[in-house]
Image 1 (cartoon, one colour):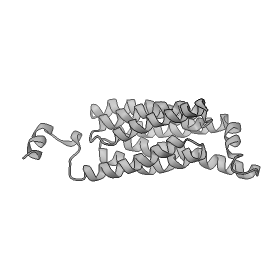
Image 2: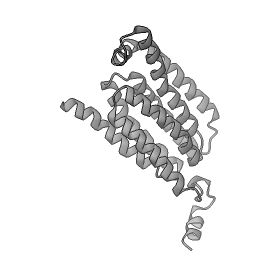
Image 3: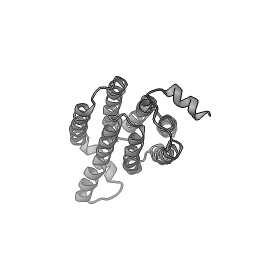
Image 4: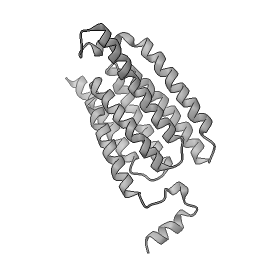
Length: 209
């Protein structure tokens, strides 16, 4: 019982960090808190036998740190977007192969038919990979609005993945994240992102008048 509470508790830490991340209007802070949010989830996925999700979390942390560094210095991220998309697909595919027996064990809760277990196992495992591809493109771009826009379909795919692998906190996380994205989009719909302003101080002075 206490183990289950601890496992789900890790997810609630991730929820708080992810929601905070999407209330910022700068690439640096969004990526920083989303990176912190990955850590409790990748630990949780190990306990839930959701190894593809765990590996996607590791890839996400490395990717976020690289993009944070490069965006801050106005470097071209296009080659790195392609690189991390490639790493995501390859690492995800290898993990699916290596953890196949555990995946089938989870699918056994849904159906006793082996062919359906295989089909569902492949389908649900790839959800996290596709979700990570969405955010890889988003975090490689400097525009916070694009980050939020690409996070929305990614969160929907993670929601399904978390349902399948019984991460209750993960399900709530994605619901809160999608809600947070909508709220942030409304809040910042007329506000230029901080990294797009030539003179942020000047903008703050105009906003206060």
